[in-house]
Image 1 (cartoon, helix red, strand yellow):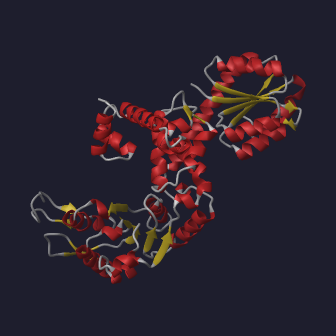
Image 2: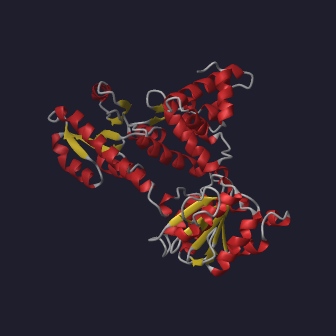
Image 3: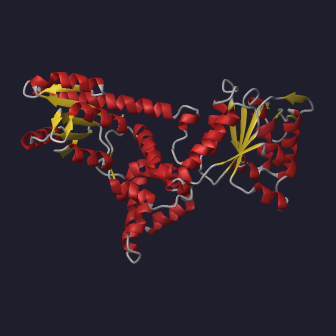
Length: 440
């Protein structure tokens, strides 16, 4: 097990000795002789465990523990103390320290204790990841005013049964908001059913929504329950509602007005009590003017509108969201003690994120696949570090892209469709680039 360790001690010889011992255990070790330099390192790097002396020239260990844990609650802190200062160490544990060692007496316990602290960090991060995939408003990450305002509106409307229209650019998290609204409502014990209206042809979308009887059309080999019926008692989420064919819009409007529907190939009327949440990245008012969207349906949908901000307007949330995805994908890829250099976040900040959170999510996943030595840096983000390369240095950009494609293909074990998804390019474009770079 590797891990990122910060050692804080003003006894330089002891500091260097501990650094050498822990480095031999394959830990990534940083050293600091003062609290001030330690806090600077904590801001710049991601650590798992802090090993600190109780008494430092510019701080008292008991208060240091409280300060570090308040800012970095995921860290575990082990204190080193002289025999006469054990009372201080015990008090520090009450402030959140993991454990303490008596200098000279407990030297053989240092490495086992660090491993135990790392195990606790790993367990806690697993719990964080599990919580991250649970539903609810806690999965909406960020503290920027725009996202907090959108979250506040969503929390209020969740308590009602009103139809909600979520608007905003692609990738801003509309389905996450829809799921959170469902989880915050009285319908949360029933189904949350979602469909992307742009992903199907008219006939297939109609079958998916309304269901069909056996023999209703060629290929209808058995009865199929539609999503409107599946959502009975729960929530129906229609993503990209602006892409719905206008013929289906009329049928959907009738369902919203009567809560009744008829399956394809059937004459019997069925009922469904569901809450509707719709989402779009289009300007529906403009679509109405162009004759692509029904005005009466728009008024039915737009009882309560929430606009989700693009990521470029909430850049202060970017690092927090990136850290969340690093934890999620590190767990998924079975990676431990990933170290993040400051230039990684700077590379992320240089991008406009036209694909918003979805694009950032994919970028973090790719970078974890591409990184070397368990360290994320700007080179792990070829697409987003290109702005740092001189414009005339096209060879460097081509080299980065070639390496990028190679590593992604290694990760997918040659699965080109999955590689194209991670690279966010079409399969035809991937084949062209493979030929261009001479890759098999």
